[in-house]
Image 1: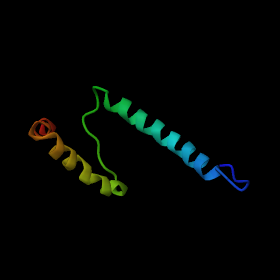
Image 2: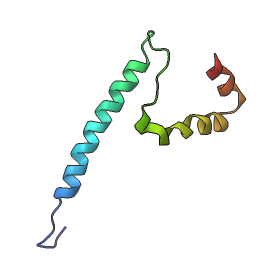
Image 3: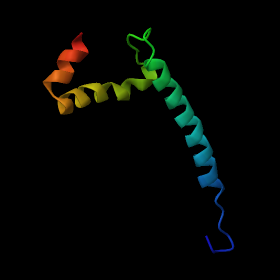
Image 4: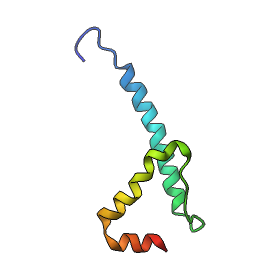
Amino acid sequence: MAKPDFDPSDAVEFWICQQAGLAICESVQRGMKSRAFTHGYYAPMEDASLGHPPLHRRRLGDDAVASDAQ
C-alpha cells in the first residue's frame, strides 16, 4: 500500500459487490424463517449447488436426513 502506484479500486469494487451479495443472502434467510416457507428450488444456473444438500446431510447424520424427508 505504500507504493506510489498502489490502486485499491479492484478491492473496493469487490467489497461493494460483496456487501450487495450479503444483503441478498440476509434477505433470503429472513424469508426462510417465514411460516409460509415450505421449500425452495434451484434455477438451472445453480446446478453446481445441487451437490451441497446431500453433503451436508451426510455430515449431519441420519437425523438430518430423516427430518429433511418430512
